[in-house]
Amino acid sequence: MKMKLSYYQKIIEKYREVKKRECIEELKAAFPDVPVTTLSSIVAQEVQRKTKKTYHYHAAPHNVSKYYKKYLNELKSNTNQCGALLKIADEVDLSPALMARLILEHHLKLNLGDKNSDEKETVPKSMISEMLKNPSLIQDKYLGAEIKLCTLIDNYYGPLSDVIRNVSGLETENKLKDDLTKLGISFVDEKQLREKGYDKTPDIKLDIPIVYDGHIINWIESKASFGDEERHKEYLRDQYWSYYNRFGPGLVIYWTGYIEELNSFTEQGIMISDSVPTEISFMDPSVLMKKTYIDEDVNS
Image (cartoon, rainbow, N blue to C red; front, top):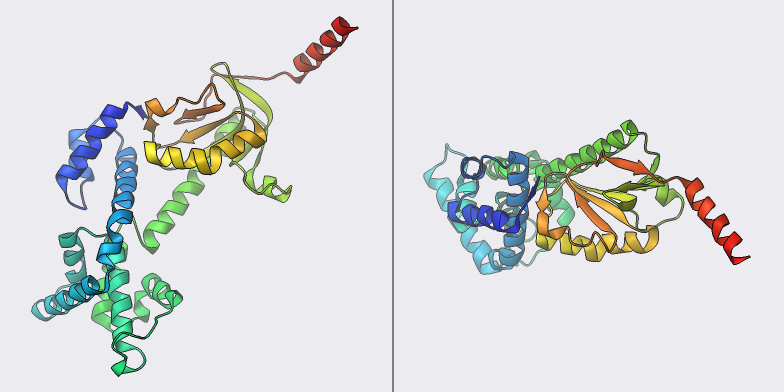
């Protein structure tokens, strides 16, 4: 769906007001006209932005040490319950999966190698990532259970969220291809373009341009996320203008919705939608050829 910037801002204000990780139900009650997938995408991007701004604070050695000591104290007082790390993450407003990573790395530094090294040991990132994906590799079974809970429950960071994000991206790309095929639109995908030697490519390049709402479309980019101001600005800079310079005007589909005011570059060659347009017309190459012949006759 497309929404006004003012409405999007109300959703963000409500999210900040709720101040808790599980907030989708409350947001849905406040904004019943907005699909859950749209609300989830908006929240995910807001969480990611907030985390980028605050992660360095939480990752500071003295804070990690403080969280680790708190975790050990929680473990002593609640030996039969799992959820100590999750509780700490919620208290300090940090992603559970990122809290799990910080605590796991700190734990490994203290317990691997020379016991007298006082955290000077460097733990390979590959080892940490592998243990986060497979907590059964962690020798401390209590910590392993805590890590597993944090990574499973986190919708925005960690191995599980990465899988969900990748699956969503593939699903929307496949939906795009299916919709185009049903409309009888011929195209090549990103993989085929790269095989031809293109380095930066959209998801779809149309074999014959189409016309939608009076505008030509040569390529289509599929995004499983919501099109907000910051995200759209980044994509314009890093992707869309490059596609335009190489392939001409195109269309971006934000499947979970976008801010209506962002669709302001239509005349410059970049349109936004939340679905594959069906009210289209196909460009007839013979018309272009006829125009060329007419021009030649006039000039002669």
